[in-house]
Image (spheres, rainbow, N blue to C red):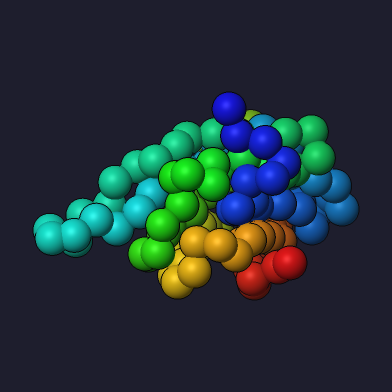
Length: 118
């Protein structure tokens, strides 16, 4: 299936513990025309290193608007931790399918930060 050479990857770090956020459930969707509905492409979990390297294969990626949904409420509840954000959605645009895209997420029970990584 998908490998490290996937054009789209993510990496989640639990900044409260200073460790990778392993076992965090996430869903990847793409906004589809003409109805502008989100179509779920993949559900996955972060690995022991907090990464989800193979979200799309090179043949699956195409220009468009994508969304990564991170189930943060479940992640924190499994750790016995109260949190403020029940989920995080990161919406981004891919214009060139030949590029690589990395979407890191820095996560704590009370905040999150994301950016386009390399």
